Length: 589
Image 1 (cartoon, one colour):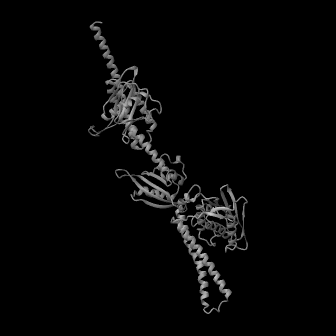
Image 2: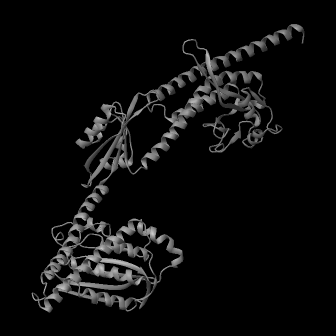
Image 3: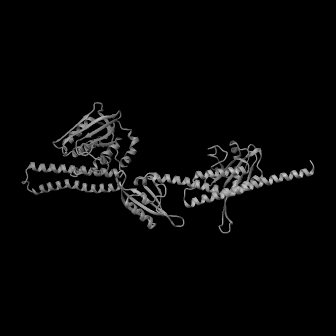
């Protein structure tokens, strides 16, 4: 070949290279425009808080972006790695081109190790010629993923002045890799320059995608936490649109999750006029201090409950109002307890006054007989007997009050477990209650014990008798028209006994059955208001049953249909030493 032919051949080769370079330059320019358009779209979506740029759409766009980058530099795989400031590591971002799903899920490399670490720390490009011979940390890992060679450039995000366009801040957020040069070739400096040019614009999109992904994750975590709150939470924007409503709030207003989605306002979702008024006041007045209101809401189940609404203004970093947060706390039980305590004080006052009035009256009468001639001996003994009985009644009431006080204060209520004669104690309790002031001539009181019930059980004899006397006494007291009261003892299973005290008295409503055994709880109807009692007897019984490692409950078919009170006791108690430490706190709790 002569010199002229060589020159012509060289010119043709140069022309081909120039043509190829022009094609790559055009592709890069077009890619840069696509990146800018995508970045503007994502930023606009973030600023307007509109869900137009869904994460899946963003990742799909990133995948197309990586495909074009790999095509321009003729690579088979593409991967970007993001810096984690908490762990000081670089982790594989998603999506990744040319890798199997989940292959890079846990892939991380220290910010100061491997070719990736060098590229990130120095903010300079790196060429990986051969993963089989390269000794750097991530080269061995890349080789396991089918990588032969690659190039990496830093992902640098620049912040520019809006007026001068001068760079005022620069931050390296990670690195981008292109692997496996096609046709068996190796990456050269020209490939590095192309990748570096594309990475400048791609970094902004990848950074936005990473922020978007992190914010989405944090938003999901926040949503899960607020959704788990027992209190209702409603977040309202300045325009009245409901931004968030957790499951407890949706339950309060009888809404499904799908009904809250979209751009509906609070006055469209909340039907209760009082609540709408409270929320409207909170949104419009923009008060920084917490505002507390109490409202009564009847739910979809026709159950009326009382809620305390606490609302406060939410402001951004500049102090501008962005919305209002309202928390709905269910205080129905607290209100009920207040009512019960008020009724309890009134009842106890009456219960204390009754025996005191009798004692005062008969003692005053006896004091009038200064010379002992006004009353016969039998009359005086009768008066003494009444005073003695009223003193016993007063002592029982005071003992009950002291026991409740000890339980609430967490004081020790430790039982004295021993072997006690079950059959004998049941017979004794029924015999004593046959002489109870609550027993009338129209009552019949009896008991039965199944043949397989053991004679001896482990229990605190005194507390066991109190359990029987209280429950049998309640059955007599709440059967003012008489009828049969029966105590039956059976085996619930091989290790447990069941006691059932049944009557044909006033019965209980389903609502009161749920309160049976609670402090101060008394059935509130016209038939029971005239019956003496403080509402603490069943609470004490439940406490005594608890420290015996048993359970207590009641059953009734409704008002006027009688009640059966049940409790269980173990035949043998667990080792006392193992349970003693927890018994007092369990009863107090």
